[in-house]
Length: 323
Image 1 (cartoon, rainbow, N blue to C red):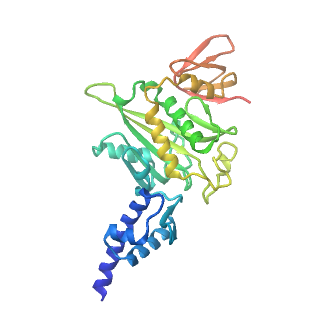
Image 2 (cartoon, one colour; image 1 turned 135 degrees about the horizontal axis):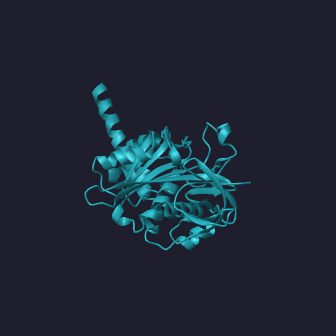
Image 3 (cartoon, rainbow, N blue to C red; image 1 turned 135 degrees about the vertical axis):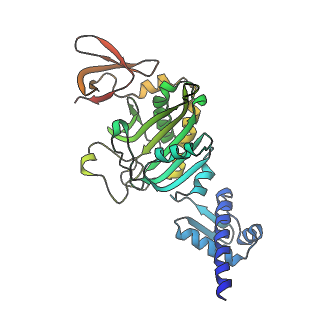
């Protein structure tokens, strides 16, 4: 009896995986008898597997007319992500950073494009080596593209920020503005951080691959916001209860990032750049200089005017609003 019970548990685990796969595809629901026939098991095994999925956080409904149906639930898992993504995706419940995971996969020879999604990061980072607060409840991902798929490498960061803004607005209706060069703001506070890194082909020269790291503050987790960040960051849904799932948003972001490559996007980016016309402080090499942001040029550089009347186009550097 003990051996049979152990074998039975293994069978139920396999049935659970197949059940999830079918329910992800059959959104209108499938009867228990049809599921049993398709998977090749008993209806009791279907019932036990459904209970196992519920224990993992999936929401299932069961009715005599509609059978088993998978309801929307914010569960991050490889099956859910793979169902939604158009490119290969890797899932890590917890990691130091998705960018580190992506680089590790590159070193192992994984074909591009691909994405890495994490439930939370323990060592997320932003520009200039700053840490990026990455608790449960946010969307943390990296997208890896081939250099051949990026017509304008110098504009990849600005293109990616606009792509993320489009993804958020299309799913949530929340208006997004951009702080040059790559931070997305809502209601005057940062909601998204983006970091891009390029890998150079030493033999042929030029960009070989690019890693785009993206962190979205979707809904607050149990940790809350650290006191030093309360006036700087914001969640898309500060009270929780987001109507979209993390997997849905991650998949849409990946789709928009791929779609924007080669697009003439500067006009739209410029219209979203909220610092234009504002007094700013330009920080480079530890030196600060007051200026006014006057434009974003066709190379996605920030055009600024200094108090002495001189004008410069910035391709990099830290910009801070002066209030």
